[in-house]
Length: 426
Image (cartoon, rainbow, N blue to C red; front, side, top):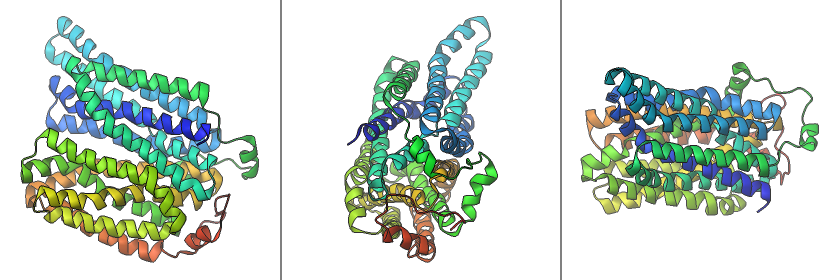
């Protein structure tokens, strides 16, 4: 593994470790300062809303100015967000001694919102990291490289929540400060060790016109038949999977009377399988099978597994049906991004990946509401059935739009070292 690939994988791992340290603690932190369930939900959603704005712009800026400066700015924003999160508790204590407790609580909640919004606006750096991978790998090895990024992402989520829970014993501020320290270490790593991937040679191969950083320039990708189909798939697959992720704990409590520890074990099991697929299996699969075919197979697997989740009669069968959920999730997360990078011009890669990240953020806004309503109104079978029906529609859609599309045919026909050009749109 070369230095640039190792560096960016390590950067993603540290970034997600810091993020996942504080994620499970936010509801408790907010509740300490008098937040209602609605306010807590808005606090969690504020990150996704700001990422919806920030991710495509960061990706596009990285196409224009380079990956390294955008990564530095993004991680610095994350550092500031975590620092605010850490100081919020101390500020609350100090203000409570000066003003009435209610005023202090409102001020601290404002700081928590500001912290998450800053991190959301600047924290869409996964798409920039994926663009970096696209710069330093050829098309044959890109899926493997992006899979390793996904594995680093997954490992951060496996380790982070448990570590954050341990650190929270010493106060909710401690995970915030530790996350800030990790972000600062990431800044140093990028500054001292990560070279720019958009080299002068790569820039010379691109058209002279620099990509515009505008909403219209980004959304043009949705009007292209092939890239638009992939981005549409990203939304509906992301929504089905996000409903599973966000509602699983409540589902497990209602159906199997799981406690938090039991649910954590199940989700860790799913996470480990997804990491295995992305870090080890995906590179081998793409050497033997076409990416468009693997995307179709991933959609079929996800459909079947979510239907199985809906009717799982026991914990044993739940573990059985969640295995294909993890496997198909690992395949789709990696290959939707990989195929997108090969279907656009080199100077569009960061923007298209950022747009994909923004679309995924949108699903995390809607999924908790949809999943919670279904669970309350219809019972434990309904979120799984909803996801299965959604994925069945996605499977049919993929079959007619992506599978054997001329762009997909061109991608697999080339043992290419360069992305497939799409100068006039696909």
